[in-house]
Image: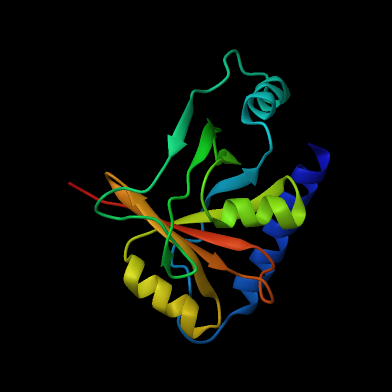
Length: 176
């Protein structure tokens, strides 16, 4: 738990320095408010209980299954994937903590768990134009590793290895 917290703090400070140092040209992220930290876990039920206790919450959040949506199916490294994962969300005053337990299929979640073990997988920002933002990231050398969606939005994981040293998740929530 301490390792994840220290990693989150270090990543946050690094990212703040990265965005502050970027003074010319178009910003990759217009919204400078980080909205989520995603943590890969091996056992979501156990991890959710631990986080519930750590945060002093009364109830463990519900656990849902993430899978591709028919209108925005999951792609991993540019190819269709049947990736699924268990998710649990802790909504705090200033940020959401997302726990992710990889289940089936090829995904950045599974890849991270196999290469690094449990830990901070990504930080997320809400955006308004997925296609445009992904192009900006790719132009800056930060490639899309996974993309998918749900009924009211979509996400893209951008591989920041070599620049910000972690995955950046772009979240677009569609408006009615």
